[in-house]
Length: 427
Ligand SMILES: *Cc1c(COP(=O)(O)O)cnc(C)c1O
Image (tube, rainbow, N blue to C red; front, side, top):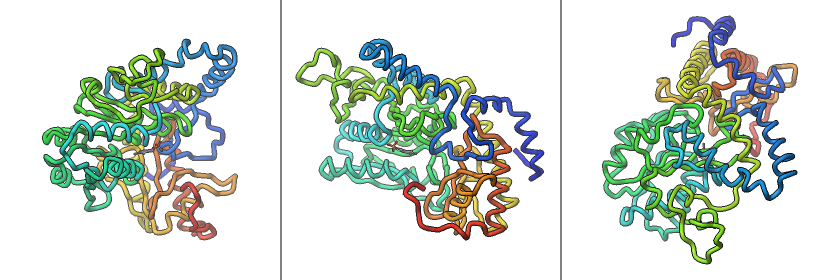
């Protein structure tokens, strides 16, 4: 998409033409002078979620009490998993909602390494989310240092070259574990090509979809992916700390053994057998009692995403990140900003990182502006990235225009200089 004008009228026209624009009304927007561009860290609250939660608390918990387990609670991790499956190209019985992304990764990494004995190598990349790498490092220690982790480097800090991936995966590789869309630069791997490479040498492939699900089309079955994890509080708008999902391809489910043998992962939890027999299906990747209230909060936004259609959301998101980069080139490059994300839209997820030596203080100035001045909420990632997450369900082109205009003003008038560079607990 080519943009010709930096005037707000263009953004207004694009919003007017946007068939998904009415979906914004499905979300709680408490303050119209707050531009929220952090849906890649914590999605907005859908209006319906408040009503669903109220019913879950007052009617289900309050009135039905323990009977709730047989009135839908116990199936919720599977039923909601089946809905997420539709967003990621999986079958209904290949996805379950449980635990956190980090814990799910732990379970699947151990299961994968056990399934590839004698192969000492785990391949990941320098863009992976630290928690993913820490979990892998912890597994290596747990398994008595029989494995080593090799990180594919990035030559330009924006992308990972296909040749570098090819060079890293070999016959010693048990597992390739990557995040599909990188949390910092938004670089997006070619899922089908990398999965194919892993399989060629007999390795298993695990994708972390935390920054992809709900924002970009994912076709796990189409790419033949073995394993995947992802969180539900980013583009899935499930609320702070909502439980994560995991995917195991159907034909691997009976073969893989995950290491946390909880009672709900057993074949027959309510026979209370004293010895563990794993469920024959995706259920064996379950552990213990699910957080029912948090599960309930996930459903409303998934319904919205499914109704909007992931291909239409992706088309809008690509146009919007393209527009953001256009404005950054016009207004911000002269002020010392560099685009910290791939310029090729099909190699980029749904956020854009803008880099500046004063990024931390500029980010604070965007967030902490005193009303009635416009407040903008992106987030900051070390050392110099301000991440602007575009959630096509509720972000408008005008949001992007207003945010970039505010950013230009903060830097050109040096308004960030009154803010401290001392890092807050959560950046
Ligand atoms: C957000 C995110 C996580 C979060 O993991 P938690 O266990 O929910 O804290 C993990 N991996 C990636 C790639 C993420 O973006």
